[in-house]
Image (cartoon, rainbow, N blue to C red; front, side, top):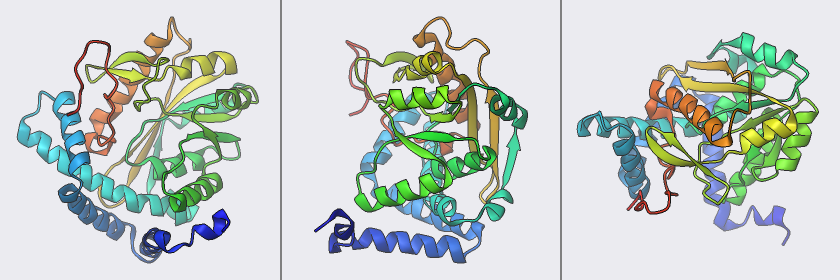
Length: 306
């Protein structure tokens, strides 16, 4: 049996039914109804996803020590509601036309994007791993016009979701680059393309540097510095957040430093982590707290997670 046929094997039917149900919901129902369904699903996930709840709770406990326990628990519940909404927002990103999408978006800092696109350099677009990753990607792609672009990509574990992600992201956002394919990224940057890059996940490994994130040393990929130098590219930041639960979003572009890379990859990583932390504090429930961001520890430190 070839791979295409194997995707329709009975073991994959639940995923296909879920995808079909998601497409029906986002196609037939108003945007606000989709978000309401997402919040309900998030509340259910909070009760069932014990391991991920514990990871997120630990992250919030260490990153927001100034908050009381009750305040952090309320934030944790809002985070899972945001995760549920993000599922339906993924469907909206995949199957919503550009005119409908545009009605829900406000853009700030457009002049910084225009300045980057008008230059003859490639652009490294720094984004964060927020719950809005798919919808944010669709919103950003709409602002880039016909400028060639590509985004870092990690294959999904489920083959049906992998097929959907590849097709939808290529159609709406651009070409996909394996996160460890630095040569392709450099080639694209030297051709003047836009490459999306997110360095705020824990990939560990000997090449990471430890840079503060919410006051905690976090293993951070310093690859942006090397790409900027080899690709002769400029830096641009993009942050997307949900403004309310009715379906309004704000996409903000911010310029990177004029002199980049800086004195060292570690200092560059610290600068980028500060920018992402500032974004997270604006809407903390929308960051991906279920990820083990602090899994890799400096030598001699105890494990962060139980």
